[in-house]
Length: 90
Image 1 (cartoon, rainbow, N blue to C red):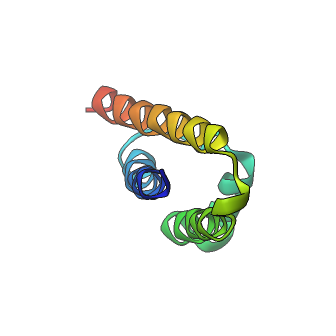
Image 2 (image 1 turned 45 degrees about the vertical axis):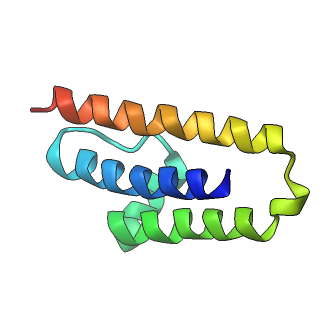
């Protein structure tokens, strides 16, 4: 499950970066939005998502599999939503 979540995080970085650089979209996560203003979009995404991925891999044996499925499902929706925004911005 963690390889899938890692892939989804990478896709989230890519699609979020594309959305924010190609359209009139804004980041809905206020913590990320503030960090974008301080260090830039791509560095902030890599820092936050990289930290999240590292934490999940480190804590894998303590995280219930049901939570991992929920995380994966949530990020499938996030990536799908980003792709939807990209398609509508063309």
